[in-house]
Length: 186
Image 1: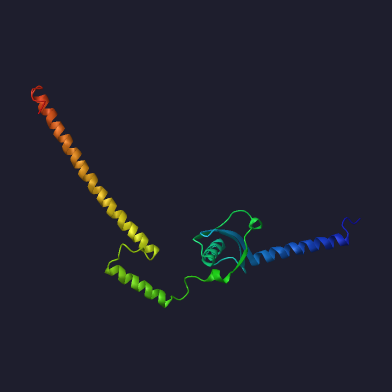
Image 2 (image 1 turned 45 degrees about the horizontal axis):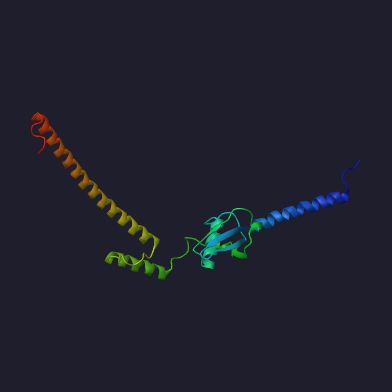
């Protein structure tokens, strides 16, 4: 007795092949819903030709690319499914993912770094905004160190004043007690 007909087997085979095709095509592209701020926008980021490995996570590639292309202050990947994402589709090639530190240095960038080093050696103008994140961090650390030094000096001065006050009060108390309360009002 035959439980499954030939046509049923064929349908099962076709469904299986269809599912395998979907799995293979899903490996070729990766999608994320990216939300950006300043200006506010939502994109459906599709990374074409995505493969495992590379320099950075694919989510970060989408967020960075959308921020750069859209001129946004910041972008991040939203939770949920991409089917809930109501933004326009933006395609990013996976090849952009492989560009990394092995890229040759740009001569113009090297010249700018040299100029920044020379400016730093000559003494930075503190009224200008920092040109790099590293410079901003250095300035913040220097300012914090100066503030801690000033706070330390204040605490030391106040502690000395308190110590002197306690010392004077102790002397007056001892003088009062040793005189059997005859010279307490001075």
